[in-house]
Amino acid sequence: MLRGFRIVFQDPILRGLIAIWFLGYFAVDITLVGDLPLARAFGAGAFAFGVLSAAWGAGSIIGSLLGRRLREEQDAVGISIGVFGIALAAGLIAISPWFVLFVVLSGLVAVASGVEDVAAFSMIQRQVVDRVRGRVMSTFGTFGLAANAVAFAIAGSLVELFGPRAIYAISALASALCIPFLKPIFRRRRLPVEPS
Image (cartoon, rainbow, N blue to C red; front, side, top):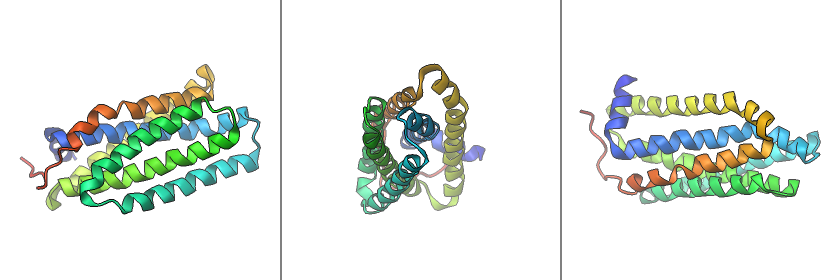
């Protein structure tokens, strides 16, 4: 595991990618806590919340299928679609006046997240040689779970302090913070990283 961390942080492309990975997971995970209180704020019942959850699930499937259609040289584009898509859709949820728009935008967040995840997985696998790929994937998995833990730990308190719409503003900000890290991933090498 420690070797995986070392490989990731020695390579500028993997460093940029893991920052996007952490912030992207945080941006999506925090909205999972905000969905129910915001649905209640709209006066939506159990059926409407079920529709919201279904839109998220459908969006995730669509995003994954779209991400699968990307060619190798389009991985960075797919990640960018995810970064900008999540930032825009989550930001619009924060100011949405209608529940139906909330449902549509939530589905779009899921589409963007699905595209980003598939593109990121593809780039990681192509960027690292076979014999250390498992260690590197473990490092990314650790960062994803850490983002999940942080998001879930603070989201409830944020809802109580600032209301459920603030969750989506924070999600949009977290995704927007990924933008500076896009530059190195557009310079991805053709040959995978050899560990030192």
